Length: 424
Image (tube, rainbow, N blue to C red; front, top):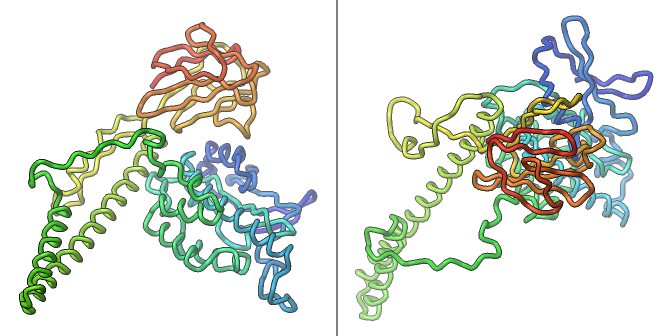
């Protein structure tokens, strides 16, 4: 990318030789992002190519010596104002990393983010962070966290702007989670940095929160135990025998049984970690495939078969995936300026006229800024009109604002005066 000064401000520029490489959907997502970390892209056709520009007037590059904690003449001990700014910068950085995964939830690859420190901008206090995100078309395999260039991310985190803001352990963990495509770990570290750990990983919360703890029934047969449980039982029995032999002053058999117990326990722990890592990688890959199935395929995809992944063949393991549960709003009334179809693939899809509050933006005077929310849980969809003045109907029947209603495929849903047919 290049930086140029125009008649009305400063711009970061990137030219695409092929206009078809521009993704208008990604451009809309980036331009309408509610996180406000990404500069709005502006595109202009130049001959056979296309120029993508990002205005950053009023901001500075994070590589400016002003933000270096090692600048000549800077005091060794920061004052109260500097400490406050560093604290705010840390929270802003955590929020920024959180949006990397949120881009994935909006089916935009984080590989589009420009991680060059010279192309990342901030205000004079070094608190606000602004990045460029190129709205380029991507292939299905790039719709995952590991599509981020780990080396570029590591270089970014090691620049002076983040000194005394993010610890070395946190930097290493972020880079490691990118290389391993571990979204849970990445969000966990981002939550620690931003200071809201639990809020940063909502899908890691227990689904049984507020429910009574279920009673766990012990297996009635030794065959019902897992291999790990059996190994732990054997290790405990060996330890008990070692203790009995020690009490009887039988040193050699005691040592042998104790050694056996330690070996079994160590092997069991290692095998358990390997199984957990295998499951995590499979789940991460499954999640990436599910996202890709929405963006890149309209054909039905067979259900995910985990048993196939354990078959050892000369070829790569067979992996089949079931697409994420998604719905569709199809326009059935004659309304200008409203798209004919809207996809619903998030757990919560906000509908309204405000582009900062809504995922589906409908520019109509009868539509409230946040008109309604469609939630999906375990394949079931629910419509919840917001507590406002906007009118919502299901099959021509008015519904109460603030209440939740289950909606079925084929039902007509009316927001204001605009009618849609819901399908899933």
